[in-house]
Image (cartoon, rainbow, N blue to C red):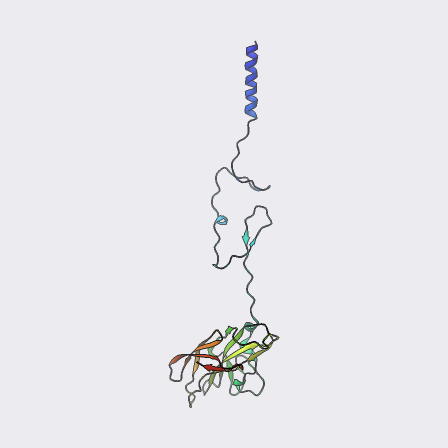
Length: 237
């Protein structure tokens, strides 16, 4: 009888132990509350797990989502502000001290690319474009450095003698007016006016100006100018 009781007790203990043994769990990182459960099979790769591609420049600052466990996202950098000189509406610009155009007034007012006189002065003719760079000395000397512009201007009627010039333009101290500095003159046209020297292209190199010109004989050459004095006059070199 005692032997039967011992056997029964051992069977009972064995049954209870098997019912209370730890449940096997799937390995993995803990997730925040409310997240979907992790399946036993490994997750398949998704687009969000692929490495991000972008420009070769410095990385944008990281921004974290408010949702716990959400992946870190990156925001783009703000665009660089546009300088005031680049906002100029050149076909309708008002430029001070532009004596090249031959006007008696202190300023030249362009409308639709021309000052409208009998012998017109045209700004950026034939699809020419301005060049922007910081190459004009600031006035006064303690004024903040700003971008300047180099624009092409042509004096004369298209079917008569005319002359071109490159005009450095600088913003005034308050950023409202645009002032012309001494210009870079092109060659005089032929006596009959049927041949004109033109600026084919131009650019600013440091504080100097370089241009490809088409001469009266139709040939082209590269010309360079630098400051000749503190007044802003130019000389070829």
